[in-house]
Image (cartoon, rainbow, N blue to C red; front, side, top):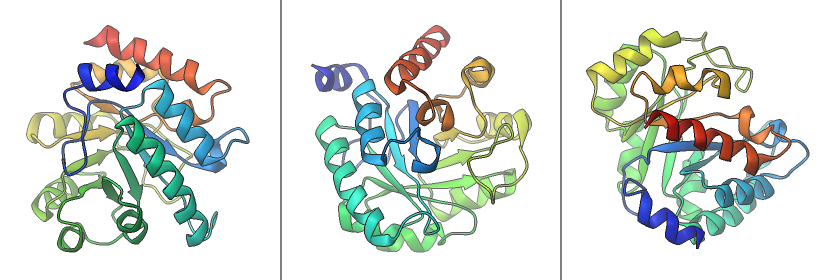
Length: 228
């Protein structure tokens, strides 16, 4: 029943081979921010609750490559069964090995242009923090942008200062490329984000750090529904 609902109502949902970023909730996995749950457990809850796309984001300081690969194999099965696009952050090797739908890169990661050569059919996203970075990512062939951090965030230690609404509004007005707004977004400021034309939004700790993940996603979906 859940899968049928998704396929009927979300015509923007990506499928294998598609490079279109879905509208809605862009979920991110990061075990250090969950309340004792594994990434696989959180992934299952998030998918069951109806996230629209799911990214695996772990660092080698937290897990070995083997651990990441094994987790991603399980999560790939969960997302594939539900028709939810699965994106892996940084690790193109793991993304290719498990057959992920996409790869997401930061400013200090592998170049988007080179990734396109080895993963021509994958959705490639690129984190951007300024108009110049957005322009370059688009020229290099990114399929979507990460735009942020909109507000201060503690989920990434190496991220730049918050960019606020100015850069977000620049992307909305200047570029047609799909993007996800990210960084310090919570339920209390979500409407401010959505009112600026954002179609895809990422709330990291607001979801994976919630005592009840499914309930939290339901609350976020209610806010999304109010803006449509």
